[in-house]
Length: 210
Ligand code: SF4
Image (cartoon, rainbow, N blue to C red; front, side):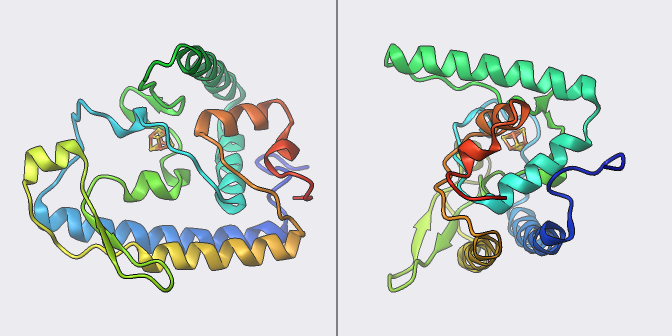
């Protein structure tokens, strides 16, 4: 295996991750247009959304994040793994005690995401008011984050998540069909990091073969 390659860098995955990058690009453009309309900026946010316990559900985003992790130096990978272990330990302790915690994502260093180009969909879409229309249902509007409300107040510039969710679902379906995977994924970034570092990707993938 050449330097920079990993088990997910073969042609079967590249077609899918290339398509994912296109979806991410469209997402980022729409987000930036809406955020620009409000003049909304995340910089210096005290209620950092990288402390939110987001769950990620797609094999395609999992694979792309592994690609990003493998692009880090070994030293950084080890540092990230150590942080992820701490997050998992602290989360388990808090859950056992029935406490709510907001722990920083292991990929956030000095308030910056070190895998910014690889960050998952929810990290890209969070923060500004939006709408979403699930199949067969009426559109539902969702709020911005606390910082958005403080900065921009109650207003709405159309930001429709529907096409991004739809494109992601189609891509995920095609990937799962191609690799014959029907496992359920529900993982935080910390769990993705540890599953990868432990060589246990199969746990995220159920009985499938990625
Ligand atoms: S992946 Fe990046 S953007 Fe998403 S929560 Fe972690 S540090 Fe923040």
